[in-house]
Each structure stands twice: as C-alpha cells, then as structure tokens.
Image (tube, rainbow, N blue to C red; front, top):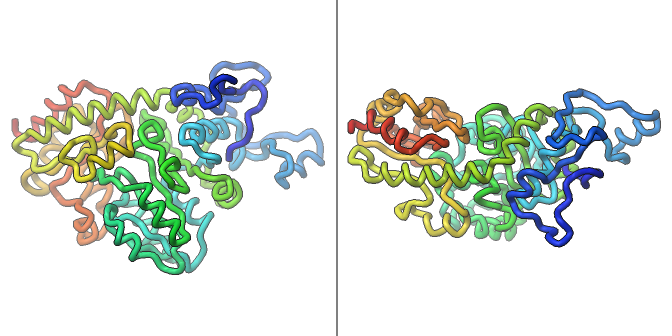
Length: 405
C-alpha cells in the first residue's frame, strides 16, 4: 500500500505540485537509501531487522509504518505501488503476483458469500473461469451482460450486487465501455465499479477520473512492456485498498516479488513513449488490414468503423496497441495466417515490444463454452495482434504471406 515519501525521495516542484505524467513515470515513488543511489534500489531480502522488541511489536501491530516481511512490505515493491498510484491518480495501491491475483484480491478482500457481481460478457477467459469455477464455490455469483448495453447492467442488479467488473477496451474485440455511465449505475445500486485497465494503462486512460472505484492491472503486460516478469496491482481509495486488500494479500501470499517490482518500475519509465508509439503503429496496421480483400472485419478503437469509436476517442487519448480482425473463412484460414508468420511471435501474451499474434478461440478463450464464446463475438475466424515496436511494413509483409497476397 502507499505511504508518504521518505527523505531523499521525489517531491514535485513547489511551483507545480501536480507533476506531469512523464515526470511521474520516472520519479514518483522514488525513495533513496543512505547510499544515495540514483536508480531505484533492489531490496532482495525476505525479512527486516528491528532495533528492539518494542519496535518489532509495533511493526507487527501496524503502529510503526516500517517494513516487516517481504511477503507484504518491501521498499522496492512500495516504490512500484507509489509510482503506479501517481500515474493512475489513485490514493492507494497494492501490488500482486499477477493480474489474476489482482482480480482475486479485489473480490476476496471486498466481498463475502452471497454477494453478487455483474460483469461484462467480454472478459478475458481466465477471469471468467475465476468467477465461474472458483468464486462461485464460495457463494459469490456472477451475472454476465453485454458490455455496451447499459440497460442490461441496470437490469442485472439485485439486492446483493456489490461489484461491477469490466475490461475496456475488451479482450480481444476492443469493445469500449462507457466508464462514467457504468459508474453512475453501479453507485445508484450501492456497488463498486472495477475497471481492468490493462490494454490502455494510465498512459492512455485513467478510469478513476471517470468515476470508477477500483482499477486492476496485469503489470505483466504493458507496465513491464518487454515480456519479462509477472505482476499485478489494484488501485483506488484507501478505504477500499489499504486494509481489506492488504489483509487478504498478507495472509494469502499472492504478492509481488521485489525483483519483479524493480523490473516493472523500470518499465514504467518508458510506458508513455511505448504506448503512444505502439498505438500509432496499431492504427496504421489496422487501416491496412481493413483494406485487405482477405479480411472480413477489423477491430481497433481508433478506426472510424469501430462501433464505439466516438466514445473511445473521448475516454482514451489513443486507440491502444491491440488489433483484432476476422478473415474470410473459418479456423483453417485463421490458422494459415498464424502459421505463415515469421516476424510476429505466436504467443498469447501481449504488451511486449515484440508483436504477437494468437487465435483467441483456441487459446486465451479456449476453455470457455462454445456458446458463451460465440455470444461474446469470439469466433473461429478471429485473430488478435498485439502490436509492438517493429516497423509496420515488416508486420504487413508477415501477415500478407498468410493472407494470400
């Protein structure tokens, strides 16, 4: 969780208390040790020593804000939490072992048996599995609705609805949720709105400023940005994050390793530069695909043809780096495109500087029932590309091989 900066850490200039996002990305959360290191220190230690028995007791009781045990308190991890909180405009942040651990912590820390979740039908496959296979065993039920149908969100609410959960843009069709409208509906029914901001990151979208109560991240993706480590985070008001989620993570142990926190800290320094460049490349590639005769449809929020284009351009500063498209034909045609790639990596991960391609129906969403998958628009002819930093012309040549031209 976040705490005040120690001496030697970054403080915004007195004449500009609200530092810009570029400054925050490289300086927020920085706390220097007695050695005065310029780069963030990596504290690879499992525990911390105390000056006395009284201090140890105070630390364990939470009366002394110092560090205790790296499962839930570590200086490097703390710096990551502080920096991401500054970028998202959040009061508090807890880091987790992965993006899925962030979602689990959100539900387990804030909800109880008998509570109800309303979620978008357009969720990442593992998130749906978490809600349906595991949380349901503990009496937490989930109703799925179309992401863009506000009336459906209202109608799904019941007396025990406590949480709205949504990804925007969605995976893999890049559907856009109206965050402010969903926040209003959730709050009218006494529920919180949690937004998975993985695809946009705070470089392109800040859900808390639009009325969301919670933001979750898979830091494994764009926050790291180079496919190196696993990580996650949950952000929001201190009353929702500090005690409920910290207590869950302290006892459940699904916390971020200090080394991973250090790697992601370095990734945050270039986050805005990468997201702007990768979004521009994604739009260029999407425009090319939309004109290709072998392509039936392209999904990218910055395309004028996108169903929620106007909303996306109000809510986001760019379209993001994900491009999904449908080819003419079924699975065989889609797999031919994948198998012909020599530059794009065939992997389900995303958020890397290296472009990746996957067939969602048989990978990321393969464990979902066919009817449910098809209802979400994820058919056999759909492909998803996470655009990296290669020259777009090289990606076009790579795809043209499998598209037949």
